[in-house]
Structures are given as C-alpha cells and as structure tokens.
Image (cartoon, rainbow, N blue to C red; front, side, top):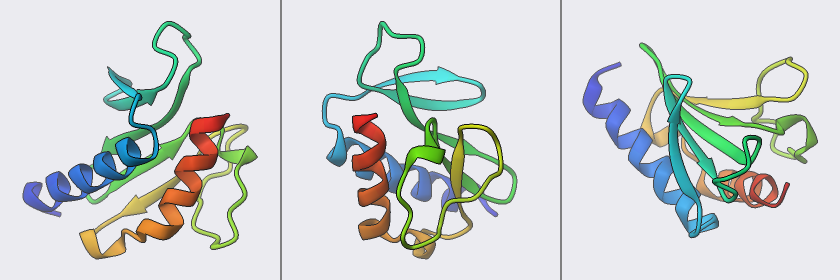
Length: 106
C-alpha cells in the first residue's frame, strides 16, 4: 500500500473520530495516534489509528464491549478489537460512526 493511500485513510478516520467526539485529544503512543476524552486519565483512550505496511488499523480500546451487528471487528485479545483498511473505499462511515459513538462513551 502506498503512503498516499495510508495518509488518505488516516485522515478519513481522524475526521470520523473527531466528528463523533469533537472534544477528543490525540496522544502519540505505541507507534500510532490514540484518541482520548480524558487526557489526564491513563486509561482514557477510546480508540487509535495505527499505520502498518499493508493497511491502516482503527483500534478500539474496549472493543470487546462494543455491539458489532455488522461483524467488522477483528481480534481475539482480552479487551481490544480493530478494523483494518487497505483502501479508502473500505471505510463504511455509518458502521464506524456507530462503533465510535459506543467507544467514546465507555
């Protein structure tokens, strides 16, 4: 995946996150950008964007607690879940906004 695609996907995800949680702040951590509505709370992040070689990932800190009727969440860890994007066309705004709204409230 080329860098331009990665940048476009990251920007589109950033816009969706900030549309959902306009007061969210970003923190660079773990090789990505975390979004938090509680900057002073170590565990306050609700999602993050991570750029990899072949995809961009939107990760949800408490992903196991999210309702996912579209079945887009991936991962088998104890808490986190994620969605991977290889193209801007992979972004389903309606589905992601529903997940982001839930995640920002947790």
